[in-house]
Structure formats: structure tokens, C-alpha cells
Amino acid sequence: MADAAHTRRIIVAISGASGAVYGARLLQVLQGQSGIETHLVVSDAGWRNLQHELDMDRAAVEALAHRVHDVANVGAAIASGSFQCHAMVVAPCSMRTLAAIAHGLADNLLTRAADVALKERRRLVLMVRESPLHLTHLRNMVAVTEMGGIVCPPLPAFYLRPQTVGEVVDYSVARVLDLIDVPHALAPRWQGLELNAP
Image 1: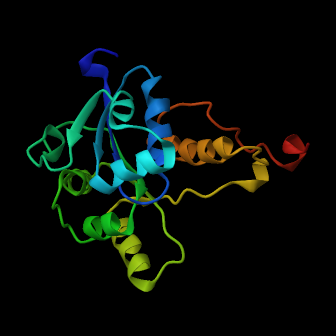
Image 2 (image 1 turned 120 degrees about the vertical axis):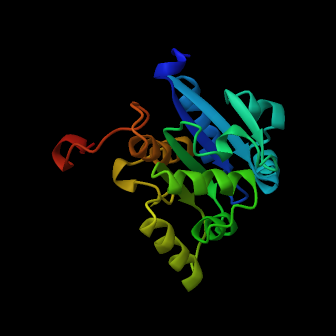
């Protein structure tokens, strides 16, 4: 890890929506980046999904982060605006978590950290996972967007012709890395039809 004065802290939160792979993959990629310090917070449902969808136990997930915070510990460092942080990503973001963030319900460390990111005008990216969407879901996305957050659903880019599920996941994670200004070579970039043609 780089010197503390030059380290960018990134909070990675995993909520209870399906798609735990996005949070886990983001942590894996950030782990290999110099100058990045990751802070992980996972909801109770998030832990269940990590086990169910990825067969990852708690220790394996925690090993991917530099610091791990209990979701019930609202006194943790990341709950304060005075804690310098570059960005926060909720991957995946459940509709319950989206609603709490949209309405300022900082009732646990995950939603409190997101609330701090918004009030401090820091980058907040929500990888929302639900389909279909009803009106309240859409209104909550609008509310977060109006407050400065970024709603970034993990959607496949079929024009890049992905061959594996891993490539589909990496594309969405790559988009998030772009949004939080982390350099990467995780997924190909579109060069136009001529250069991308098979």
C-alpha cells in the first residue's frame, strides 16, 4: 500500500440484492491496485448471498479488503464526514438499501456511510439490482441522482461479444472503476465498428 498521505480510500458495500459477485470482483480488482485502501461493509443479507451465490465464507471475503467494518457499528470511522474517503460503491445495491439512502435513513453503517458520501459531495455509485421496477424504485433512483449519487445498474455490453459470465461481470465492474477514477485494463474499450469487428 502507498504512503498514507497518498492513499485513496474506497468504501465497498455489499447489500442483500442478488449479484454479490460484483462486490467480490470489485474487491479483487482493487486489492491489486497500488495506492488504494478498501473499507468493506456488508449487510446481513449480503453475507448470506455471498455464501449462497459464490460459496465464499466470511473469512475469504474479508481477506479481500484492507479494513472490514461491522454493519451494526455506526461508530466506525467511515460513519464520519471527517474520515477522508475518495468514493463509495454499493455492489450490489438492493431496493431496500436504495430506499434508505434516498430518504436519508442512516440506520446502519452501510446506509450511514452512503449518507456521508452524499453530504460530503463524494462519489457514490449504486449498482442497483432489481427487475422489473415499480414507481417507487424509479423515484428513489431519481432522488439519489438529484443528490449527486450515480445509479449504475450492472448491465451486459453485448456489442463487445462477451464469451463468459466472468467477462459480463468484468464489464460492469470496469464501468464502476471508470466512475471512481481507478485506472484498469479489466475490459475492452469500444473502438468503433471497424476496429471491433471479428
